[in-house]
Image (cartoon, rainbow, N blue to C red; front, side, top):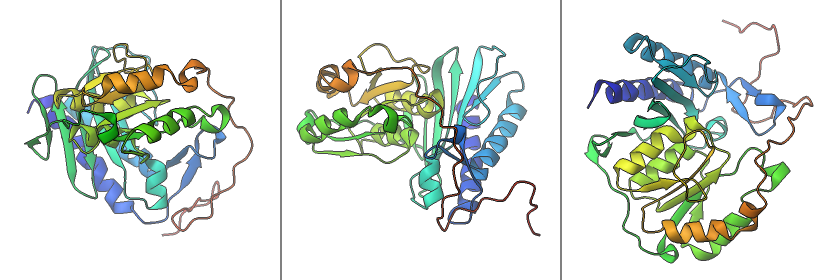
Amino acid sequence: MSKFLQAAAQAAKIAGAIQRKFYGKPLAIEYKGGNPINLVTHVDKQCEKAVFTHLKKKFPSHVLWGEESGRPSRKNRWTWVVDPLDGTTNYAHGYPFFCCSVALLDGERPVAGAVYEPLRGELFAAERGEGATLNGKRIRVSQVPKLEQALLCTGFAYSVKETGYNLENFKRFVLRAQGVRRDGSAALNLCQLAAGRFDGFWERGIQAWDMAAGTVIIQEAGGLVTDVTGSPFDVTAQNALASNGLLHKEMLEILRNSPDEKNFNPSPPPVVTQSIPTVELPLFQKREPGKKKRK
């Protein structure tokens, strides 16, 4: 294991320990851009800070790009892309499907990545040319040859209520595949595909921090990753189509002939500006501005 992959794995586990500590406890919830379905918690922020601190100590000259802090303007050959808590909505509801994803880009090409799922203690890791592992053991994609025998996974962008995007795609794949799942963590879905638990994945509206680690893990596990049109994968293009390789052609045909893709509008929907009330769920706890936490 190279020093890069070792650092990624260590950082992901550091975040995982924080996630375990607060899992099932009251959370301070905020809404990004006022969007009622785009949550961020104090755990997301604490995880990102801890991961960044670890990576800065290891590689002080590298650039750090996180979901919560954004992409810095400073350029460097090496960029760390971090999703400190992928599956925040799951986490906030106590649904046990979330992770931390840490990847290293060489330019804009993912070359190493680690994804840690803390509840099961599963660490997925890979570096370019060295294969992919789950808790240190080699993993490979499935050998399912036909869509009718395949279990697929996908997700919906935060703009789905405005655009309706992926609803027709979802219907078409449900009618063709053995099954389709929507778990709420793209990073972890990609790793499940790499381990042969899923056979295919597609999604638009996902970001570099969702995909960077998972895609290199899939490729090193023998899978294929492109964009949803079949063009070469671009970590900044906000979409991905991944499969065991055997299903890629069939999946592309469905996407190419879908009204969702023909009518896709890449322009983002207007930002929701109205005040969003605190959601009344047992795990949610939002402190009033200026109010100090009791000791």
